[in-house]
Length: 521
Image 1 (cartoon, one colour):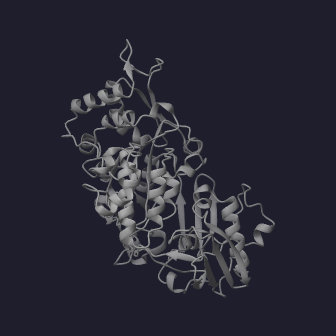
Image 2 (cartoon, one colour):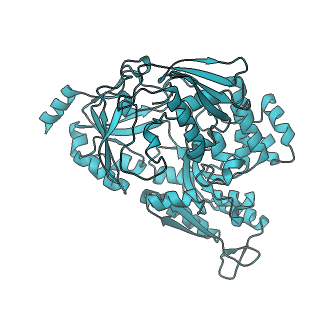
Image 3 (cartoon, rainbow, N blue to C red):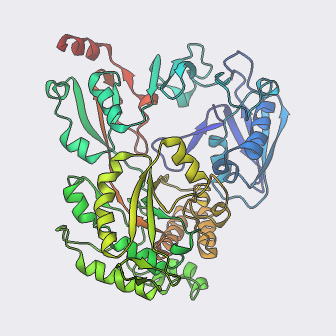
């Protein structure tokens, strides 16, 4: 459990979980949390203020960079008594950070970790305080979570109606097609589908046709965020933005959407796609006020309409785009050798490796690779296992890789990890591209420190313009709905939250539906 939990249908709200209430100092730098005295760990020991202070120190010292850097302006926590703890900030924190910290930092047992090495690999389930305990598991195959019948927080307001499954089990598969076959066979009971081809062509098996399996969509009110292929800017061949733009011109989204995606997607153009934060048209006066100090230090295009990739007719004929790309590459200093290969001034060929851990992307990347070959680029698709993929991302050992950055309706400190200069050279950070630009850092800071939502949106739109002008990525695609299928044995609330679909939290097992399902065989 955490001190606070986010609301699933309110973009800027959090509610007390371990914390019963909170007070704020006059200067806004100290947040005092009053813990619920009934809060307990699974070994029946109380959750105390000392546990909170210990957990804050642990997150800052040993937490993943995405957490430790996000809470960098949190100086520490001090227990005032068993049930009162104060979180002290350094005065540079954003408006959101205190509540972000309160909902992000898990509270661990200080007593438990006095005898257990927090950083050691182990198969012993950790001591928690939440609604579920770890049950049976097999590393790399599955893990079961068993509802704690004695969960201390079952009846607190934020938990009423939630956590209804006695047991839920997560199955892990190395291959997405094997996972789908597991769903078809009934081993897996709920499946979120991410392949447009599978969604359009393979949900015609008997259980779907009989109604035993429900195939449906649910609205997704979250910003789609930024999904694309991101360049590794740490590599010299990507140093010139004209090179990066040229490569992006070889991707024909409209053809791919019609031919490969069955028309299920829209083109992503913005880092804040499907939100009010998308930059459109010329900058507003408020945006210009934020951008003017950077004139001459950011591309001139920032002060006009934001960059969007060209739209094709979907026929697959993109000769005009490839001609434009050829000119951009020449302007960036690339030439063709006698074999027609693109080479730099030293005669080194342009080799481009698309790194992926999913074979499903190969059919998408291969047509892109054929277009790149017309430009003289020696591109290839490299499939690696999930562990190697993660290791290479953490070490920034790649040319170009697909990534989706998910955003909340009110983005906070975590966006520094996506494109902040400090994160660019931090192994394991989310800034896989290595974006390091003072203008982006400054606008990000203004955005997360905004005092009103209107100011935040204005700053986000200005930031979006600079990010898009930088040509740091090749935008991919998005959709504003979840595509899911499940065996017809579940119930869910009539009104679903706008900003998430947490099935394991808010759905339940419906015995009557399950009985009807059994009758169908």
